[in-house]
Structures are given as structure tokens and as C-alpha cells.
Length: 442
Image (cartoon, rainbow, N blue to C red; front, top):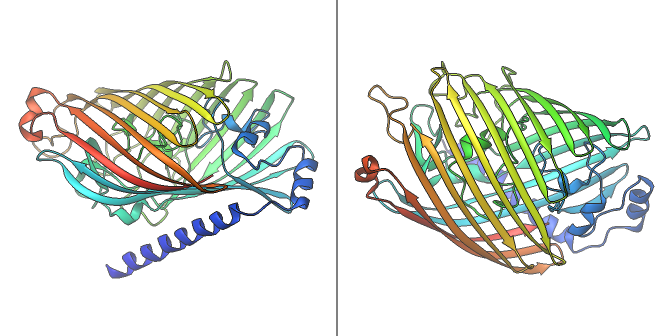
């Protein structure tokens, strides 16, 4: 037992040292030779977040600001911040977010916990003379340090802490390796491109951008309870995606491993391509992004290996700029899960975040899900179906402590709504809250 814990502490310590090194890097200027190389490669080197609008995507001839998690899209008006440098023929972009959060959830099923979460993401890109692009991406997370049981989050359910019991009223930790992926794209014209994406782990073509990458959600340390309806496939151990994009529309399909990651959060699970998905995305203007997707998922849950699942998702994201540095982003999303017995469960999400200036961000979320995971059945497994809801409101205040480094303090309050049948075990309609501090390098 001591050896995995010690290994985890060493890995997170290395991650923190790397984040510190990035903070030091952010204080320095990019060498003139790097700037010359970036210009020669056909794009400007982004030294401020706003410059990312001038850079093109590694997947095709559209602004890099349109790219979100995996191969998903957000509005062009979104941000794609990061520290950009050039190393020989490669352009490297890195950003990091680290949260230290105190979480309290009321009622008989609640609890308290202090935990660390966040991510460090680095991409390396090389453009070739024939119009093709190779892009490598790695994303790491300190989530496993919080322990296999994750953190208290009322009405959340999914995955397992020990391979035997489901996690209920808790948010599971994400794996240390959130993404290790590569993509290759070929531009066919000024408006058309083909691309291929592989990941171990990676994110298939399903749903809106994962919540930690959506601008309407990324400033909140609280995971949505709709996570397993909309974007639980954002970490799968084995994924291949092929896509074609034309101007503001694209269609893509993926083959991927349907089983959710196991409870060993430090390693890499064996890959298997037993599921598939298809997604269509459309950005009619710079402020809007729409997607609709379908997935046929093989045995997603470790505790119910004989149950397959089909999933539908549709979402609309609106983002607009406010002045020089501000923005306002909102997401409306719907997801449906249908099991092998043709039992369907819907989830709805509406969230919004306003960032009027560099100092403040205010965020809010409302959710409604149909779930059978809150109370176990007579013989284990899923029980009766209930409709529950959650609403949360929070804010974070940032201080810029270096040119590319921000320190923030924030808090949120959440209200939960359960039906009469669940009030005895939840103590009525319980609430919860979080206070957090964060370090953001972008």
C-alpha cells in the first residue's frame, strides 16, 4: 500500500515542480529566432491569449480558438490561452490549472473534504510544407491524490472506488493521464481538411467539450452531475477518430473503448476498440457552436459488465467577447442514456460564466437528471428511477502575480432538490458549498 502512495506523491511533486518551471518560463521573452521561425511557418507566435485568434487549428484552416477538448468545437470567440514557444521545427503550447478546494455537503449523505484537482496540458505541433500538421498532446491531473473515493458531491454517481461498490453522492477522481494523443491533418483547400486522431487515453467524438474545458464551466471546481450523460467519455483508454471539416461544419466518427477507467488512477488501462460514435458540429457564426452526437457503448460500467448502452447528446454554446479581455459564455446541453433493456434516462444542463475583466469571474449552473443509481436495487445494481436537480452559484477573484500567472480565491454554493421519496435519506433538500484557491498559468 505504501509504495503506490509514495509513487503518487512523487508524481504529483514532479507535476508541481513542472508547473513552477512554467511560471518561471512565463516571465521570460520568446527568443527572436523563435519569432522568426513562427512567421516562416505561416502563423504568428501567440504571446498573449488574444493572439490565439490569429493562429490556425492543427486540425484544419479555422482559428485555434475554436478547438476545445479532444476534437470538439467551441465558438470562435472563445479563448485558447497558453504559453507558446518554438523549439526547432515544433511549436509548443502549455497551460496549467491547480485548485485546492475545501468541500462541504450537508445531510446524512454529505461529508467534508479538502482536495487538490486541476490539470497540466502541453501540445507540440509541427507544420509541413505540403499543408499537413502533426500535433501531439499530453494532459496530466493531480486528481488521484484525493484518493480513490473522490470528493463528496450530492446526487453524483458513477464508477467505483474499489471495484466492488459504486460511488454514490461522490465525484470520482480522474486519471493521472487524462490524455496522451496524436493527430495528423491534411488541408485539402482553404476551407476543407481531413484529420485523424488517436489517444491512449483520449476523447472520442461524442458530446460537447468536457466540463473542465468549457468556458462556461472551467472556473468552477465542482463537477456537473450530468457528467455521465454528456462527457464521461472524455477519458477512454483507446480511441481513434476520423473527421472531415468544411468551413464551419464538420462530421467525425470514432472507435473507442467503452469501459470506463478502472479504480487504479495512476496507470494506463489496456486499449480495446469495441464501441463507436458519430458527431456533427456546426459553428454558424463566431459566437455560436452546435453539436449533435450518438454513441453505441459496450459495457461502460465495471460493476455491470453485461449491460451495453446507447447515448445521444445535443448542445448549444454561445460565447461573446466583453471589451478587451472579458467574455460571457453559456452552454445548454441534453443527454440521453439507454441501456440494454431499452430504459432511457435524460439529463439537462444549463450553465453560464461571465468574466467582465481580468479580476472577476461569476459562474452558475442548473441541472436535472433522471437517475437510478442513488439507491441500490434489491439484489444490488441500479434501483428505482428518480428525477433530481441541482443549482449552484459561485465566483472567483484573480490577482495577476506574473505576466502569465494568476492566483485566485473563490467560493460556490449549491442547492439540491430530491423527490419526496428520497427526502428521508437525504434529510430533505440538502445543500453544499466549496471554497477554493487556485493557480492558473496561461
